[in-house]
Image (spheres, rainbow, N blue to C red):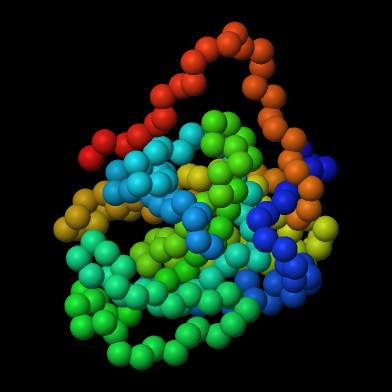
Length: 214
């Protein structure tokens, strides 16, 4: 895997050398169309899509180092009323008046895109964004780790990660789960990663998709 290169959707990506500074500047105010949404649910499970399909526990995901964004989001009752996101290389968008029905006004949001490269979900591209304190801290930590890696070796700017979790105890809400992006390897930007060996298996019907209930 160490010699593999990762290809992300999109063309005319900027030079790798231009992103380390931007990643270091990620806003940490904490104490593309058609891409699925990845999130951690309240029970600490990583899920994606409208069906809340559960991510395989040991799957590897490649983080697009050019995809980090920051900005603002306004939530209503279970729906996004407005969203302003820009690349990390740009300043935070200016805040105008929040939509009148926004529960908390504008909330700071950060995120990035990633691509699964192993297991049942290999090839799947997803977007992770968050407004939570724990989520923003995790994105910031990952961004800084990528920046440091780029400054050491510009030929391998792509972090391969496992999606993990941590937790803390809240006096009112009990156990609160927080995301952890565990970097396991560094690879290049272009070319395709070879699929991980699955071993020989007899022909069988496709396994049922993994879904969270409740």
